[in-house]
Length: 113
Length: 111
Image 1 (cartoon, rainbow over the protein chains, first blue to last red):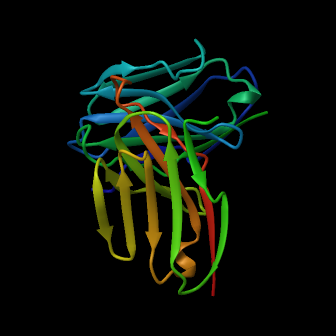
Image 2: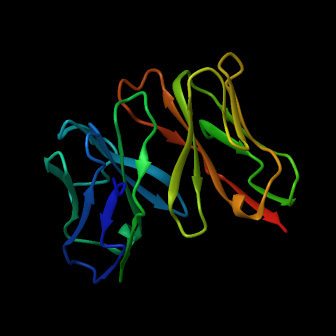
């Protein structure tokens, strides 16, 4: 397996535009996580899914953020409209179950200007 | 006060030295992770612990649940160990698979 795959690796967009980040988890993993990393706040969990169902979205900052997992091999994190304070690195991770380690993607570096 | 505290924040060592990074937390936990973030930004999960000790190559992780403390040790350090090491805990009361992250320890190993 190629590991967790995220796209794009880098995204630069103008304030107000819609941004969609994509993630392909490792095949067979039941859990998928979206994290955000900033210098100020470090790593934060935004949302996670179990068997494609969102379980905890309490970390999603506001209604501008939404995440979906239409099937076991694909998830998206959408920001609409984007703001400069959304600039961060967004990581997707997956794990087999709650008692196993998580595997991280390479991250998407988002810059909103 | 942060619920997860790491020390030191920054560490510079000479190649070959034995390194210890500490993580203290203030909540009851069901699991603790050690993560490694490379200079390029990628994150690798090193260990997941709920008790005792784990070893992988030159890395050793220990946890003392009663003292709410974990350590990550690197033996015979090498420049390629240079990275940020992040401790993350899963509170036992969270009811979800939600981790609290430390701010990381930035390690630089000099050749």
